[in-house]
Length: 464
Ligand SMILES: [Zn+2]
Image (cartoon, rainbow, N blue to C red; front, top):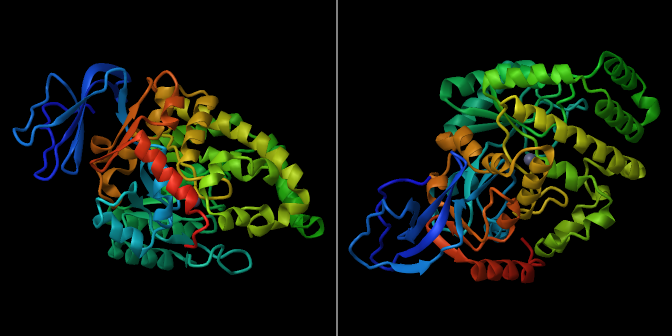
């Protein structure tokens, strides 16, 4: 963007809309181009420089003055769980025009091809989750596909490839052999492997096996702790029965947060770059999920979430967190320190050239779809990225990295746009309330977006 010599979209049924005189935000080159045109009509949109546009003859476009505004690519949330269209309004109103869904179903696969005009962000989907058994020989989540060996990994990957998935989602309990089976099939079939770094591997080992994007950072400490902290973690494992799950988890978090070997993290970063592996750190997840629930409940964005879902977000209702309830204040305090550590790690990864993907993991507890991507961008800036660098993590970087390899109705960067009141390269705040959003060739004004949100607020107690 901007493309050159693009014909103005036209439609037999409606007059195209042209917003003229706005500045174009060129994210690739990091510059502002004056006098742009945003052309919307016939289910298509393009942003071009006014000197290069060719107008179609009929019907004559409706031209709207847009000087003083900025045209920027629509935002991409690189890690969500899109369950149904009740969340569509929250994404669109926040300028999120593409999401990467991290647990796919037949429905996600089918809407990649159908319903392309439906008022929802574009969805590119990963497969159902491939995981190994837990230590109790069960699965972490209901519905995961268990892979206990190289052969089971390869078979599951083949089946998912045959179903049409282009991106395979892996999880924390896979062992090295099962992961190798998955990665080898993915390589043969041209698929990407994305997901959690299995606990039995380090980040760089997963990258060497061919994992294309590592989600979250909670395993990043593995293999990268100072020797005395590695020893302390090993001895903690031996005492876990006597300490109980809550104390063990708190002590492990304390050790992992305090004992990072920064030289090892630097070497890891260089290996990720060499392997072309991206990292989606989901900083907003760590920021939002590990709070005092009373504080978390003050977030105005919760007005748009179903009340029964918010009730499920209390740590005592979450099977991953309920054991920690007796020590929750300690968990909150340690999680703040862990977030500080992760901000430093993201800054280091970025400075050494690792591709960073902005993703939120919405709707995990208190991570509200759409709104949370702005938190993620703020955290990336807080980590030390410039607004341009952070914005690329939510636009050009995921689009290039996942591209059309993930099944979806793509071309999003060329067709989805935000109209903004201010220059986002100076401050990202302007992204929070766009002047307008063009999604899949349809223009939504600020008033339209407010109405979408209001409808969502009124409907939030509606059952699924
Ligand atoms: Zn997730």
